[in-house]
Structures are given as C-alpha cells and as structure tokens.
Image (tube, rainbow, N blue to C red; front, top):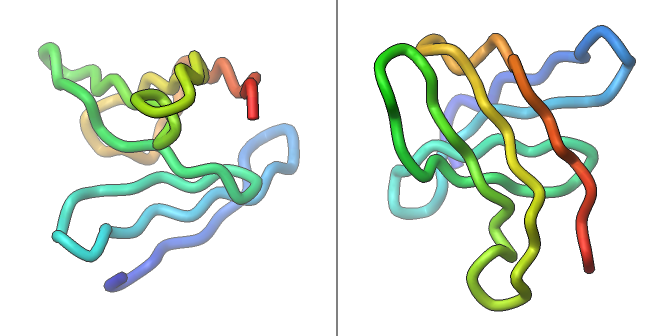
Length: 78
C-alpha cells in the first residue's frame, strides 16, 4: 500500500483511499474494502472486495477525484 489518505465523511465514518499490492485503487470504509469496477464519465463505480466470492452487494459511487462519495450502499452480507 502506498500513500494512504485518511478522512471522515459527514456521518463520521473513517475512510481510507490507498492502492492494492498490484497498484489498483482501493477505498476502505469501516474496515471494508472496495475495488474500482468501472468509470462512466466522471462517475466511478466501486464494489465490495467480497463481491465475487461471497456475492456481497455493497457498492460506492464516487466522482472523478475519488474523494466525493455520491452513493454508498454499505450493507454487507459477510
């Protein structure tokens, strides 16, 4: 992990933005990791890192700077 940025959102949740071992962006919210799935225009869609093997449906949507979370469905099944 390199150059982690840490902050709190409006509801007080701790959020960390960093990179994976392979250099891909990761967002961590309350200890849960999200990976960037796709980018559509200025919006990036993120999925829970347990999406593939556990079917977790938690998602984030951010604006292009990855600092502005515009949607957060942070309900996990694990």
